Image 1 (cartoon, rainbow, N blue to C red):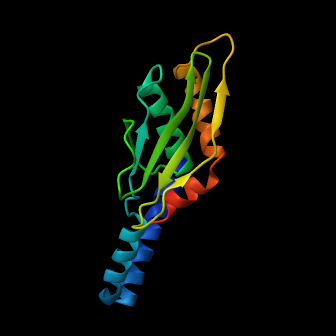
Image 2: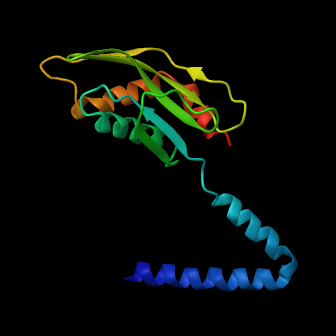
Length: 162
């Protein structure tokens, strides 16, 4: 209980200090402070994710890749959809292209482009995942997604650029 009182007292003291500083600096600085606060809380660019439809449980593969991307991008929203279409002409986007699909093997690579206009399309290396004593499905997709991202560190760097 003492911790709660300590923090609530600290919060009140900080509020008083902030009010005193605002009065000292004057209201002229308020627009600058508000603009800085808005910039710090600006929404990150959403990343569009294209996932293949030909795998067993395509929703699970797209979710695994979306989760891995979101983790790597510190929570940047990732909008996944099952589509074998090429990437759109503009906007931050990632596409998983499959090069091989069997009941015990999945291989493919990532293609991506950044949000900045004119960002060239990039391609990562091909990654293969072989499974034994199991079939492809949701249980193994997370490892495949992590391997794809680990093989393409420049993907995350590109998508972090505004």
